[in-house]
Image (cartoon, each protein chain N blue to C red):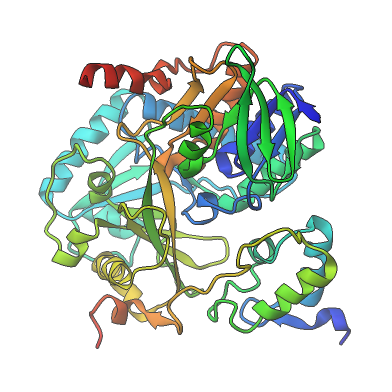
Length: 397
Length: 90
């Protein structure tokens, strides 16, 4: 039976980053994946690392640190993942939205982040194709973009250079514990691996892995559909552009009503667009609970297109060549889970990033490696501890 | 024109050589070939080249243990403008 210091389950962006950061610490690591690398959520998403879509506080702090790490990795890695820092633009449809945006920006600016309001004229200067009746927006300098699946490949290939063992097409079937309840081995359909430490990075599938050791993780799959435009020489958008209403669709606790059609409202659609290195544009965005069903829904496609042409009328003339959907690992409090599980020594979780997995992958990998080697983590991550759910349950009872 | 210059994916102009090299280097699935080379990611959504890519992966020894459907079909069947989709153009 092969034996490893750590076994990472799931080769999406979080697992790939965690595995890379662990081998970098000199540990013997296996990355076990039921399909191929980046075969789940990390190849069915969009591709940005933003701070402007984070709540003020730890969410933004970690997001910002992650972007700094991306810059470093883009320099160090020989595998290109198409990283670039282009900035991002929020657009506000109405004065009322602008009011909410101002409050948000002033809080982020107070915390030292380079975020500023732009008026309707500057909006047009940044993106000439935007509809001319928009009230204004937010410019965030540091926001960045990359290719999500190439990022996974990059982590894995750089990890392999340092001795990472990759077992793709190995489905985890069971996890055994020793007589003191500590992690002992991972059983797959193609062999068993011995280890004292497991990191569960299976994203939307991580509850299934945790069940094997009797732990309940409250992660739910939250679907998102994206439309892809044809390639075009038109600079429809120079960087990520999204409506401020996006914040409203992401966080249920922000109460604000947009003036949108029934279709758009029903499907929780908020406009986002981003350019890719291949000169296509990714147009979204959408959030819905549909279990693990990632089939494309025509109604959602219509709603996304309707909302997109409201902000970028030029899109009417462009073709949509494809649609896809993925499922994000959603947790109620919108903070990822990054910690050991107290009840099962040696069982760690790094999951629940919802739509921030790509964005948060470097810093998550780095901090999991710090946790496992007993170093101090870059940030105080008590808030990301799995035990928060246990406490919640206790309160609810 | 050598065999290797044969274009497999016409939409993205990906040659046989690029696809062969990718499979040989990474020993990967048809899906990974698509993601790495962009073959099958153009306007036809792989409807022209997917069978060839599947065959090449099979012949050149990509992962054999997989029950997943190699490449998926995604809507729309034909490109459609955002204007039509969004209900602005009939």
